[in-house]
Image 1 (cartoon, rainbow, N blue to C red):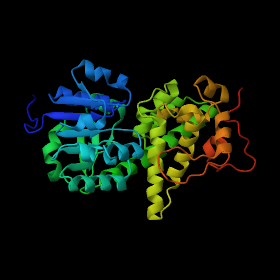
Image 2 (image 1 turned 180 degrees about the vertical axis):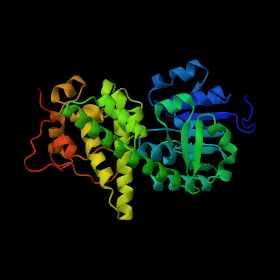
Image 3 (image 1 turned 45 degrees about the vertical axis):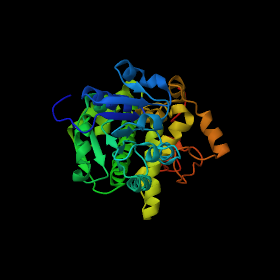
Length: 353
């Protein structure tokens, strides 16, 4: 076992071995911890199993003997089920166990889980991450922790195996709130670079050179540096799923309603990502946002179908974003419903030429 690893903690469980989770779990194995894994589809855990991780048929089974349990699942409803169901982690984990949720989820749910765990003599805290798939691969994620550093000291050696920076927000749910702030900024930055690329391309100038200009001045962002080149290359492979960013924005908007504040940038971003998900892009990477600005033929070649948006508007079954925020979809407007064009503007966003 590597130097600095806690001698009191040996058995670790990891629930949710998707794009990010499998990478994080791998770093824990590299550090010498005995790992038990659970995922809804075993196939996504095969790489870890081949390295010696043990398989569990349920989250409860995975947690039974674990000193620390990490979870990284999709939606707040998944988090609630994994932790608070009758056979959830709050009851299934052993006394004294640490329960660390890496999912981006609801701040209130994080507080509920923390409080429920304390009653059962267990320790739970929210710890969403940022840094994307590459950060997970490199072990350089940023952790956003809803607890004080001194209160989670026993598990810091584990957190250090897959992160380079850790921010402590000193209270249950604080990590989730800070992560939602990050996601609001990320989403708005993505809309910004998508707008910029569309303006460059439609104006007939070199879009790659425009990105260089942005990077050398004040118009650049982490999103434009890492994701915009993928957009230009037509690489929509997910490092972070579009449907998950839609979920995150929805959580932020729900929180803003609680606080009686308006987040116009987030509202615009939600409209666009919700549209992308409705027309078949939910499992694409977030950089597929730029497809909304392309001709219909280009979208179809990438696997999108604009007719699905009309069907969704007719059905009005809700956004499917995993929260109870009321968004309302309305009719498709040019460029994702920005609604800032004058009456004389003629939409050509999805025409075949």
